[in-house]
Length: 66
Image (tube, rainbow, N blue to C red; front, side, top):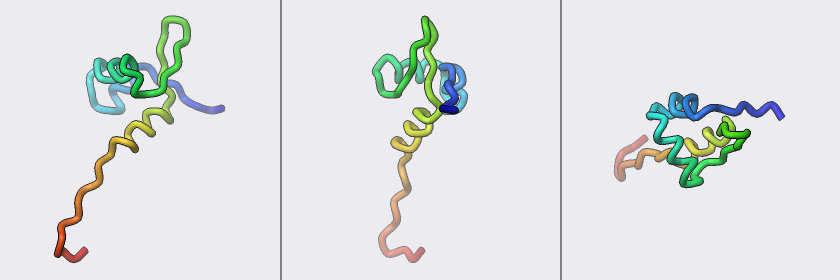
């Protein structure tokens, strides 16, 4: 179990957002998190999963050869 647990500040930096966004993800239970006393930590794998699920691939234009 070599999982890395990140603070809200770390997650905000990875996502390129303010700390408000990961806090909202936690509040709305849209991302996995761990409570350690009064501290909240987010597994690094949960951040990677969140990114993967919300990644939008570009559309391929019809009639254009790749």
